[in-house]
Image 1 (spheres, helix red, strand yellow):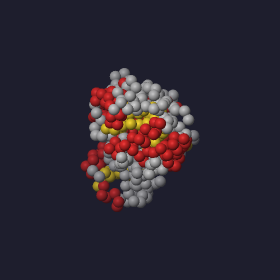
Image 2 (image 1 turned 180 degrees about the horizontal axis):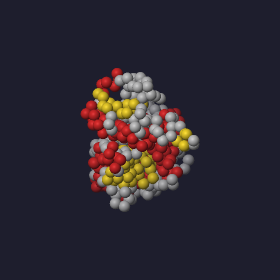
Image 3 (image 1 turned 120 degrees about the vertical axis):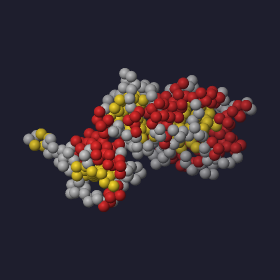
Image 4 (image 1 turned 90 degrees about the vertical axis):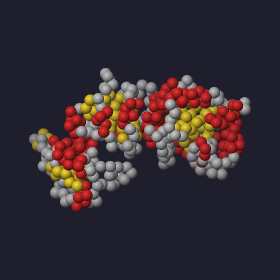
Length: 457
C-alpha cells in the first residue's frame, strides 16, 4: 500500500496506537483502527511478547491496511523494552529496510547515529525523531531550541511528548506547533493533556492520536470521538475554542451535546473539556480571542466569579457563575448563570404537572408550595435554591458544611439542616430531592446522597 504523507506542515492525520501483545493482535488492531477512522497507525513493537524482529515485521508490514509508524520504545523512554540495545536498533533498521512508512528513533539514538555518520534514512521511509520529557514542560525558548536540535538529526518529523502537570503548560506546546517550520507532533500525556490532542489540528500538529474502541489510553480521545464528536478534519487555525473548566472533567457529556450544535449553526468552533487546577493561572495563559468562552463546572462555580470582569446581576445574586463569555470588543470576561433557570424548568417539565387550560399553559409552577430538599450548597446548589425560590417552593438545605447551608438558607428564606440528619429525614409526600453534590458523578453514577428516596419520581 502506498504511503500517506505526513510531511506537509498543516496537514493533521489521525493516528491510532497499536499495542497488541502478538503479531495477530497487531494485525487485528490495525484493521480496527482503519475501520474506526484512523489515517495511520503507530505500532509499538515493545508491546509484542516474544518479538521476532525480521519475521514479525514482515508480517506486520505485508498485512497493514494503512500506513504504519514503527516504534520500539525502551523503558527509559517510557516504553516496555528492557532488552539489549543493539538488538533493538537492529529491529528498527530492519523496519527501514523492509519499507515501513515511518520509523521512530529517540533523539539520543538519532543524535548518536548522526555523530557516527550512520544514515537514518533508507528508501522512501520517513524518519520521526522523538523526545519524551518527564517533569514540568520546558519554556517556549527551551522547546524551540530542542526542536532545532532534533531537526539537525535529519528528521523528517519531530515528536515531543511531555507529562504536563498543569493545563497551562500545554500553551507552550501550542506555541511550538504554531511557529514550527517543519512537521511537528507535540502533546502531553494524561487527563490534563487531553486538549493537546483535541486542539492539535488548530495549531498545525502533524498527528492527532486517538485510541481504538475498547483499548482506552489515558489522556487520549477515542478514534470515534475524534471523527464523530470533534470532527477533527474540520478544525483549522481559525477554529474558535470553547471549553468546560472543571476538575475532574472526563465525565462531561458537554462535547457530545455542544459540538453538533456548533456545527449545525455553521460556526467554526470547538467545545472541549479542560482539566483545570488553578483558575488564576488558567485565565492568565488562555487569554486570547481564540478562547472565546467557557462553561464552569465543579468545583469552580463560586470561585470563578473573582476572575470575571463583569458579572450578570442574576449570577451576582446567586453567587455562582456557570457560563463565561469573552466579549469580542474588549476581551473582557462576562459571567452568567444559566443553571438557575435551566435546572428549574427541566424539573418542571419532568414533573409533568403543567397542564394546558383552554390551550394555554398553566402559569402556576408545579414547584409552588412543594417541599424542595436540596443536598449541596455549592455553586450548583445555589442556582437550584434561587431557582426553586422564584417558583415558590419551600426549601430545605443539607450540606456537609452546616454554616454554608445556613447562609444559603437565609438567602432563599429556607431552612438548613445538619448533613448528618439526612439519612433520618422524613420528606413529605411528593417532595423533590435535588442532588447538587459530587455524589453520583463518574464513575459512581448510580449513587445518590441517601439510600432510599421516597420522593416524587
